[in-house]
Image 1 (cartoon, rainbow, N blue to C red):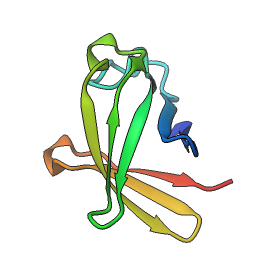
Image 2 (image 1 turned 90 degrees about the horizontal axis):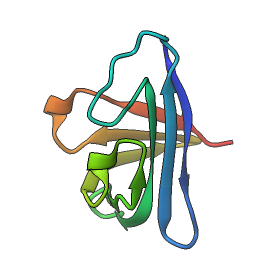
Image 3 (image 1 turned 90 degrees about the vertical axis):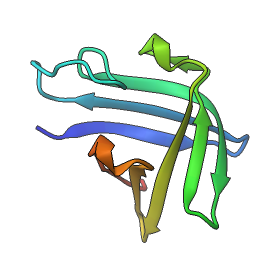
Image 4 (image 1 turned 180 degrees about the horizontal axis):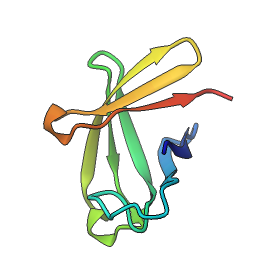
Length: 98
């Protein structure tokens, strides 16, 4: 089943993520608890490298608090594709601008 959710980059320089694995039997991951992912914090965007780094201030998964999460991004039309810097993490997410 697909994830559903949203990512919000604010004009004040913060990022918030909320996403849910719709599978009711979803197992916890590094970023999720009970199939749900939610975190927030200030974000620094490096457009030249197509990366951003969020410093997690609050998170459903508490051990993420204080961590810096760096991500690679690509914008194509109304779509934002986000992947980890380390491809070994093995995930990719696409958001559509509303």
